[in-house]
Image (cartoon, rainbow, N blue to C red; front, side, top):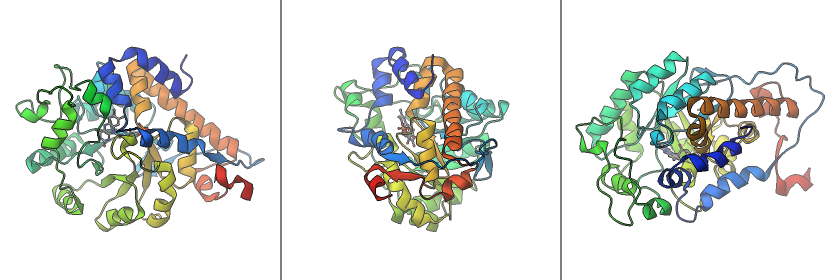
Length: 370
Ligand SMILES: Cc1cc2nc3c(=O)[nH]c(=O)nc-3n(C[C@H](O)[C@H](O)[C@H](O)COP(=O)(O)O)c2cc1C
């Protein structure tokens, strides 16, 4: 019986090939960022209020003009058909049925148009995550396809000028299975596939080295804005200064993220840097966060600290590998229920009340100061 996201994690281990499992689970180098993301949530304690009549609560919130019933969405993750034959279609169906917004990766194994069709069948919403290729024609093509498909926003990933060194992928000579490809790139284009992988190499690391643009800068954001009228959310911000630059360059939102510990190793946890970024942004644009969120309680802590919402990465892949679309729906329902129950148990009736209570979340080192 799957009662927590961790239940899906345990079972997922039995459902995936070693290459897929290692690709999904890995962090970069020593994986200290990966571990810290999760551990940092354990160091945040909740001090609940009582007797506040929580018979009626409302967890609804607005994400760039899309109403979401609980502030928890699906982070973009590549190559989902390695987890389940229906891949991204199953994820979007499950997410839409749970009323959660999904961000689709540039590197999905299902084309963006198919994914948005599936989402609209179930009343769901999709944002498209963008990687910037050295060849700007490819980048333009991705933006055009996403717009044509009807996504509601672009999510520009800015923490991947080069790919983090994921040792397991190198040891496994990571490569996509033959029948899968980068589905948003036309079949006729060689970039639809990874090149042959040499011993001790990761096919993805080599792909990024050759195809993805390491000269990405704030000018690139300006350039993207000339190509689309969609709102752009910058994903991978870890510093208040960069959050302010994102606002200055016309971003409609940011995601505080260290890519789930897969890029720079030894970073602070995302939940640790969130408060200073929230203060700097000062409500000018929505601030989302991802990394290490494994329960509705973790999500509640992030939202109480001021995040507009959270995204979850690996747990969705665990649930997808175990039960396809119904697993994704159930995993999200579990988190939603934990979040709503958490609201009741801390005595908050709305997201606004949750965020106004400045004494709700306390770092364990500060408890004695209460
Ligand atoms: C297997 C996997 C693939 C990912 N692929 C992408 C991607 O294509 N684009 C992107 O911006 N982030 C990607 N990410 C990062 C996630 O969007 C997100 O930042 C991270 O997974 C959040 O951490 P969590 O897994 O601890 O929830 C990927 C993460 C994983 C685990």
